[in-house]
Length: 371
Image (cartoon, rainbow, N blue to C red; front, side):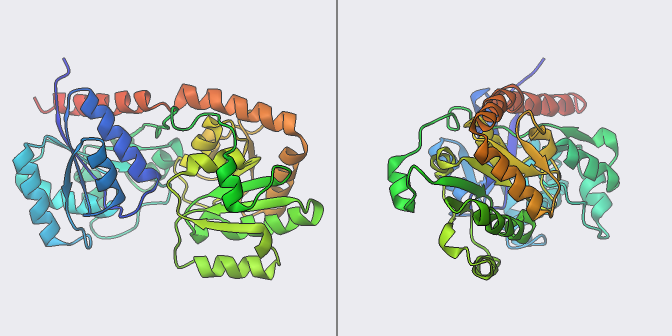
């Protein structure tokens, strides 16, 4: 029989991304089911602010590195004070810190959530950190599960639970006239968007090269690059300059209102070259019935079924990306059909309710073995 659990969710992210969004939805869902949920994150982080607004219990801990002993001491105090039974970590750094804290507190259950399909880094403590030190690793996509097993994690230690999408926030909507005006885009212009942090492995170089190819055939296209800035930002602008397309590309920087951007898009793109877990941009786009083009890497293929919910193309291939985008722009009926089918697919596989239910079942199963 299930019972109320005392759960700690920990994430070290300062900004706002899909990972933090998943922690918030999971924590909120577990709290609504009667569990005592504590969210641990850095002071003044976006997750701290948003969790507090949701009425969740928030404990802030600076996490300056994987060997931050002050953070370990603070985590140990939080675990004891709240009588924590289950710790669920959501990034490698807080995973290390929480493991060190949990050793002395004797936490019954340790769970790690893995969101990227990169292989585990090789280091002397890898076995302790990812095998001996955890009871279960939740992979957000089958590709992530496969990567963990190939990295040496026993298959019985891993379970796939797909990340969720808020279907009320991300639903079909008309373009926002105010946003059109802000961006200077008229109703006759095609819009192709990419929502992702400005990082090399997100494929922005491929996106910009494909944009230059598209503009040679269809000049009336605007490209949106929506994401948090990084050291790669200057290089991205330089790439746009080399292709002489800087006037047709808008770099918006980070936006927490991405649901306003998708309705402007005729095509949403994910052209990452590696490392993708289960990209939120694909689920969000399809939830809003926006057709997508994605590279065949990581968890992309688990969301984008080629010809059914979108177009799947090879990675590192600007010509293939340009061709797929042009195909959708020139065939609006086909694009509309893919978007509608994508919405139905997301509704069936990526609901918050399903994600919370499956995660709760993992917690309860592990706790039952400790009785």
